Length: 337
Image (cartoon, rainbow, N blue to C red; front, side, top):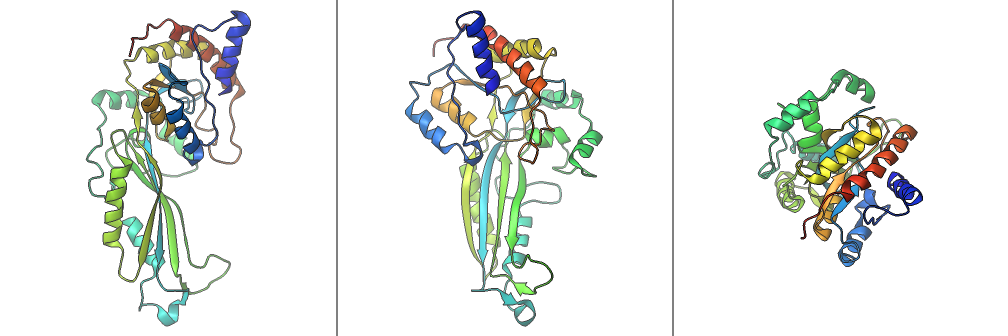
């Protein structure tokens, strides 16, 4: 955010004015769905009217290799709560006579994905737009080292949907992940109980055209069908957002590429992002505006982890790129909507 603020400051100090009108929208609720901002956009459409929204919540492809992100995955996030007996029970005395909620939870979650990484919710892939041959060739041409990637993450093997590369799985294919799971005794030592409750939080990353609401209906029906007798299920839909794609033939993309090359000294590559920025779709729809996703971070910035960081060198390069961006965008003749 500050790279854009400092670039505007640079224009005002050196030229006295900006080559176009800028409106800054800054919020801090992205990790909880940006509820206040969604309401703000709906109420202030006239005040925020614009031709283009620039969002810098994405990353470079790698050190020294800037990127323009042209696609985001969406998200659908849920919590499932299973209840069995009225209290925890002795597994020796009662085991084998009632359904264990933790056993049921493990089986139900496992039913959502097969051994090839294919999600089993009925109709899940109906609206998935396949990658084009050109996109697959472009991803394959990027200097991606799987061995280095595994070392960076501290894993000894990679996995995911069969017949797709690691970058394709990360950026452009839908996924299912359990984000948290709990139930029963978790203290030191042993305690042989059948827990009365078991719960999990899980999410799907969606690709453009997939509808989170449609998924919720199909998911609820599937989980209800595999929930065993003696178990009560409650499915909570926490939040969802569709994926997003930016047309690569946009004049804004061309302007951004020139600005980034000027700021970073290298032409950018075009990538997708596996994460989600739900507010991007709201900006596009509420303001009827195009979107540019220009980020200066790196994959080893420890996002969402301890010791999260941001490179000062890239901060300065980002300011330079942003400063040039306003010049390049100001030269574009925007058609009347």
